Image (cartoon, rainbow, N blue to C red; front, side, top):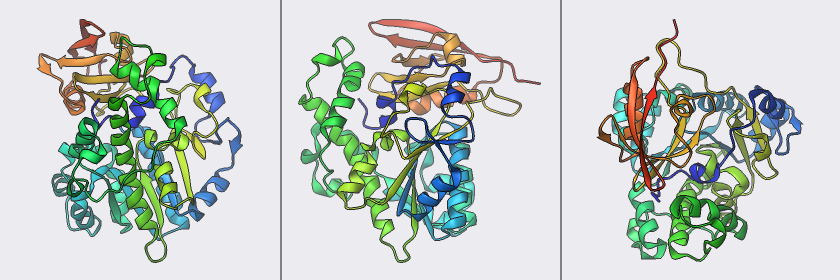
Length: 389
């Protein structure tokens, strides 16, 4: 599996059967809930977060609603702790100078995206993130690059952490060992994706391939935790906010586990919640609190079309890790676990290939897809609705 597979893709094997009404009863839009569903007062959540050393804000990378919530959180926290630093999973360490120049007002949007190598290192629509970047720039809040190069995690996946030369580890220290709970939780999901013909129960937790994969994910988490922990020691000290995928936060297995190993325990984990997630997944330990956001809306005038899927990289193409209820993808017949290998006769080698193909579609047009489903190769056609008038 590609090391750039977001951990969220592996752990959110979520059912989409709950109705909007039942999910609203679980986490109503605009409200805070504790894991387990107990209501929380917004003032209490914000006060606790503002007094902590580090706040982790989760996201599904392609969800506009999640990023709007993050912007709201940044504004609310900044009002209480103006001395703030914001770290982003979306940037590798090598582009830190570009982030510094952007915050100082020295770059245009286009220059910033070019100098931060956005198209190659993250590939998501920059419009999803630019409001966050402008907020930091407007308030002269330092932005930090939390990530490492994909080449590093890929090499660890192939060889293991110890086989990578120390001078190629980008200064990242050895990750804290995974907990048994993390391994037990991740193993059947990894086996399902990497060993389609095998049952998760027969997968071996000591399988070298699995352990290398875990090491690559933990190196990713460790890199982000190290930057956040170092920022928390700056004079002041500032409130350090980490913006990253929910898979690096939930259940405390990712970045929280590495922060604790670094001696930083004063942090708060907050996640957005929408109706694509079943209420049964609102379990103890998921995070400190979740906030209900609106489900993704249909494209309106001037908006880009959406396929309605969450994606992950795969050696064979682009894997579908989740299909939104009522989406174009669901109507097309796309299923969780499908691997898109071709779209409009062009190969799908990485997530950005499919994202860009969808974004190029005009309302009312069709996009032919070739999908691998187990041993079969299936041809599907995604039909995008006409633009609302």
